[in-house]
Length: 267
Image (cartoon, rainbow, N blue to C red; front, side, top):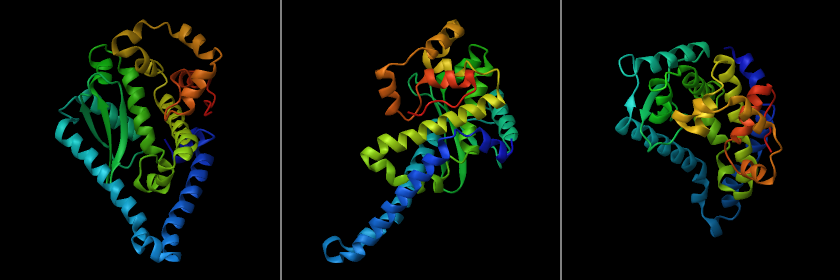
């Protein structure tokens, strides 16, 4: 998938939200670095180190996360869960990723999740929780698993996991009001983007999102058309407010957006 196609599949709000977050973050960075120069006696010159400290902090967290994967997870390969690894390789090729990311399988007490991230400036990797992989290995539904894989690889392709990207908007996460209004909104836009890319790659995998709601065993019993009717119903205040403070769009909104081929609501 070419970069131009990715740009067309991005949620309309993603780039504007990123630009706003970037501009505010630049202002915060500049303020943190210049105010100590203006008031050295009151604050001290050590505040100038805030940007290097932010880089060091993100690098440390990135390394700790990767170390946890290497120490406790199963690394996928041609010989370790080869069916899943083959899917990762094929979708990485279809997305024109420069390299196949490292991939890990880990048990997280029944949680249904997966995520993509990056180690420092070096290598991307994806992590799949064991229960979500059971969708394919126990239920025989590789389409739903492919959608989940495609969604995580889409985050990498769309540039959501690079250290530079995250460092450029890092300060927003530490300002409560900005975090609740902008950081989470940008995160929701990124999720819609990755859903759109994933469904383009795996159009038969729409039920992949249902797994997150009904679980890896019962999702097959969900009446999908009835679920869509629920998704199209008026949301009400509590669903709206829950969505507003979440890093991921309400599942009802995500599924509605995929089936109606329209941008999902951010707010």
